[in-house]
Length: 132
Image (cartoon, rainbow, N blue to C red; front, side, top):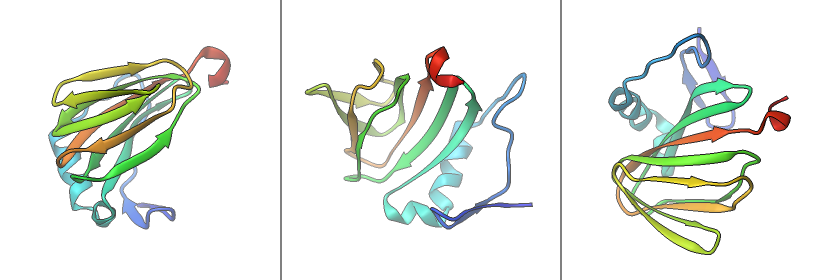
């Protein structure tokens, strides 16, 4: 059985996003994101983990692509696992080459620009009151 995401037009086999344990081969996950048709638009994302108070999203983004301003009610971390990103948050520019991590407090607006084909993990931890 496949899920059909009408906002992206991509079909994916359903995968567990919650449970007592989860494990991921990020190299394989990135390869799959880049093979899906939505990658042609400049980026493709997949929620790997989805609990009430925690999300982990993997995003593959093409060089020179931008993810325009976002903000969340929870704290976030952005970890570049491939490539090189630039992020702007709170009036500051952050250089995020591979294996660099940036952590932002709640509700801080940010955007992301890929200097080259890149992939990153976005982790969102919601405060307890926002998770319910």
